[in-house]
Length: 344
Ligand code: TXA
Ligand code: MG
Image (tube, rainbow, N blue to C red):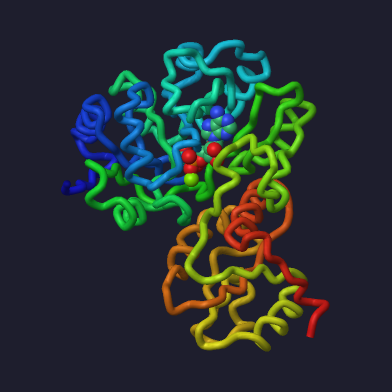
């Protein structure tokens, strides 16, 4: 199969993309968070192709992308008031809501669960494609399972060329990390994955919000996992990733003592002068958390080379989207953190 690139502003892009979805094919879709690997979410046959193209375990459910809140009733039931409030406030945008699924949603899409994640992406062309196709688009991130999510159409082609019909190219994603996922099927709403919408904003609307254990640390193998995807390794380059905490200077001292030719540093732009030429890659500015979110996955992809053995990474701390950046980086590192300031 030859994968074609459709420019987001092309005159017939929406029609061609919608036709691919209606015909049961696979389509790379741009969203504000990351690129998705989309198919007709109501067709078990089409959805199966997503799992095959990604190499994704079939117990890992997909998010259903809708054109607007008015479509949610068709796929979900027992929708609490607070779900409507969240949709009104944050849609279209990087927020996925877990709600009880109607029977119309194939259990292959939900990986056998009675709940489904729904999200309305901010990227206009993708909402237009969903509306034109007349069906919701099921889409995970368009990477090979376990690899960093794609934030450009070129990343999608790198992973999926020849496996999908087309990619709609809308340039680099504005947010850069995947959507925030909130489970509204439990008593107190639960944050399953931090993302573009920070926990502080959610608490403004919801009052209370618990943070799932999977967000904060590595899970024991026997642990109950509420977002099945959280139990798989993620975003992992071939090298081992070690997060070095502490001040810029303390961490740089720790890293420089250990750095070999086969290692690289993934740091903040402000820290580049602390490392020898050619050894460090900046993924954004520490003082601009949005730039870190936009740059993280592209940087992890750039460092995903067989000759690189260890990546020493600098991780931001804080709320908002910073919380999501730190979560993705800690997952890439398998929660391997060392204190740069306190060790020789
Ligand atoms: O920003 C995003 O959410 C991107 C773009 C393409 O929309 N999509 C994305 O999909 O990140 P994916 O499949 O890579 O991650 C979805 C996560 C997985 O961890 C999955 O287990 C979880 O959402 N999930 C999906 N449906 C769920 C459900 N019914 N209950 C709990 N977790 C669910
Ligand atoms: Mg993913």
